[in-house]
Amino acid sequence: MIEVVGSHLYVGSVRADRIAEAYGTPVYVYDGEVVEENYLRLRRAIGYRDLEIMYACKANSNVGVLRILRDLGSGLDAVSPWEALLGVELGFPRERILFTGTSVSDEEMRFVRGELGVLVNVDSLSQLRRYGRLFPETEVSVRVNLGFGAGHHRYAVTGGLSKFGVPPGQLGAVGDALREHGLRLVGLHTHIGSGILDAEPFLEAARRLLELASRFPDLEFVDVGGGFGIPYGPSERPLDVELLGGELAKLVEDFASRYGHVRLRVEPGRFIVGSAGVLLTRVVDVKEVEVGGARKVFVGVDSGMNHLIRPALYGARHEVVAATKADWPRVLRADVVGNICESGDVLAADAELPEVEEGDVLAIMNAGAYGYSMSSNYNLRPRPPEVLVYRGETRLTRRRETFGDLMRTVEL
Ligand code: LLP
Image (cartoon, rainbow, N blue to C red; front, side):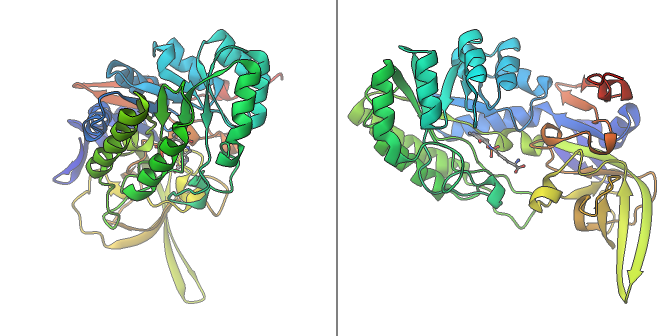
């Protein structure tokens, strides 16, 4: 559990400021038990007898986190050949990995299907035809774009007029390509978007996908994608996963009783890992700026948009907790800003903080999903380490990058 006890923030039973002390800042810290709880909660919520949770590892591909999920029996949604390769190397069963790429080259398919033996979920007619030429008489899955989407930001909406998936109007041509190359369509997939807090769009997507599914007799699974949102602050109402899971199970059961058995796949990323991680960063600078009567306080920290880009990219709001002043009155309104040369380098705009000073550790909350995995070396800054707290142990699962790491691909 990641919680405040008295004035301190804890990850599991470990004080966050002590982790910052031991591993330095900035540092990503994950609570393995929260990963486990989130996974198990979703499993329980979706009461379909043949459910496969395919963890979307783009959200967080930390090997410690992946091993926990592998041991729980999770499958893997991989969006690049490297994610698929990592899954295979970590021992996820191949048949429980699905490669859902976009703008996929023949070379990538040769690797994923030919070398790894992982099922390809094609994103377009072009890809299906190319796949058929490369791997005739094999199995394939198709991602459908149902024509509508949802998500926390327009960049996180994938259904509708977007580059993702095959429109239902092209399913006739899909059938032709399947026949031409002797392919068996074993999976029908959709993913409408990410960060959705309302059950209805998922159910609508499931209904429409199942309607299409009845046309394909070889189908072994339907995959309704990920997108299960989490609340990032007290003003957001959490998704009712129990309600959603119950309704989803009913829809698929009804389908199965009419058309034959199918497995149900879901691909949660954020729901599993989002609340399980914090980014710990240290205050290095406090500045007050006054321009033309307007006044603003900037709390400068030793991390930035290179480590957590969600606020800069989507205007996402992550709560901030001062790790050793967690229950202090929040008297300071300030922008928590990073050390990157961009005005948009804000980790938390207008955050309500206690009186903080240089040296204090701040925790950027709910940073377990799309945090490290979207980080970069912008400004030639190294990425932070990742620490996993799990079953009473605190362990470094990825070390901090060094200058040498940054120069590894350079020919000087
Ligand atoms: N399946 C597919 C095919 C996807 O494209 C995605 C996410 C997922 C599953 C997992 O979605 P989740 O359950 O995590 O919402 N960087 C953005 C989110 C982009 C998600 C892209 N696709 C963010 O930080 O909000």
